[in-house]
Image (cartoon, rainbow over all chains, first blue to last red; front, side):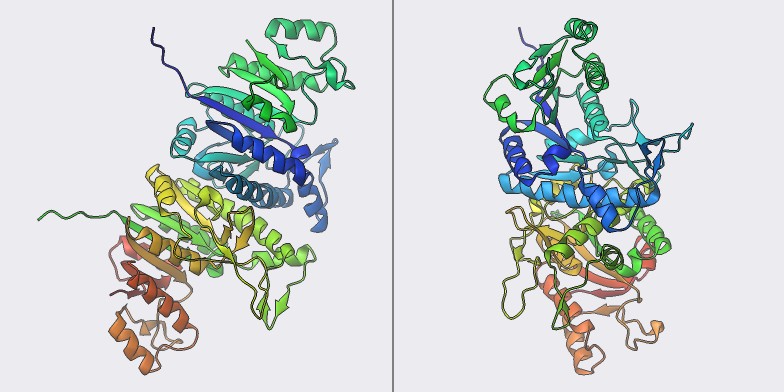
Length: 268
Length: 268
């Protein structure tokens, strides 16, 4: 029997713990390069935006303990995410042999967001995504032309305005939108080995979670607080066509290539 | 008789006088969008890098009156050129309907430079270009996939290091490298109507200059000082295959589309 098989695609998100440490970043980008096939990198901001803001004398603007992206903050994150961090990542990837192109959602009109409407809090220049935000066809064209996209946590509104968008959200939206075109695995890299039964014991890794097991783990209160929204989002992505979501340690990415178990794998 | 005809390509460089004035930039990007066919934008830095440096408390490092790109300055220009300026230009272009992708030379390995060797002065992280710097095939792939490149004045060394490279030089190197693939016109936009017989009289525009006329103009001392290196470089680009170099006013770009004489046209 002949089946139409889609090409595999890895979408890998890294956060501050990788970006802020040049040695971690070096090893991660080397392992990223070694992964075969189509791949997309998504990176957050790390501490650098805060450092540069302070150096420029820009004060963080908080409302009810939440950070607001005012126009000054937007300027800083556009400089730091799309300039300093993104281009240094691209230059490193090129050094290792990945033909990366550094992107925001404005580039190629790849991710168009809507400025978050003001309800009780005005979050400022923050962009929310919806089902039509990601231009999967354009991203696919770029990849099929031989390039590896490296996205930072910025989008645009299509009217000339850049917007700040959470990197986890971008990674998840990319994965869902590209799933009809590629067999997509979404990987969140962080500083733990994955979802742990006991947060203080790295040996207590849960290797696989399907929706039924997820319900059990929630009932048993093994998964709670901060992990809940992350896993809820992951299972939503899976319900929307993403093959699997892996949550694992950035320094263990090479295990995928070596066919070793890596992190916690969430799937149907 | 059937001849193989190459597609036309416009490579258009804008400098600080366009970038620093949001109204000028708005009109320029609108006119740029209206130009048919393949095109590449190259932009310099403007005053913003200096403003941000000052805000961050970074002092300009001068040696013999020449600005040095030390590591702090490189960080600032990477933020300002590749982040703030480039992504705002891309967002504006998208608004007008140009499917732009904002780039440095590191992206797609499009422009690989060599760090300027230290002779009498150490210029720091400055990248010089040579005949093999521009990856014309990769840039062509990007354009043929439907994207319009927007380059800022940064390159990389292929070893993970970003470098600062003059925007005029980037525009010229792109034009020469892409001439075997496209019928390339290189346009330098600035704040004058073109090469003027009398610098104080905008009506004294010289519309066409060929190499013979250029020799005359130099002998008559009509072209001198600052204009000489610009025109020397332009005629070198033409000798290397660029169809024409136009030097004109940023706010008059629409004349090309209207088939009206625009600026000073240098050609064989």
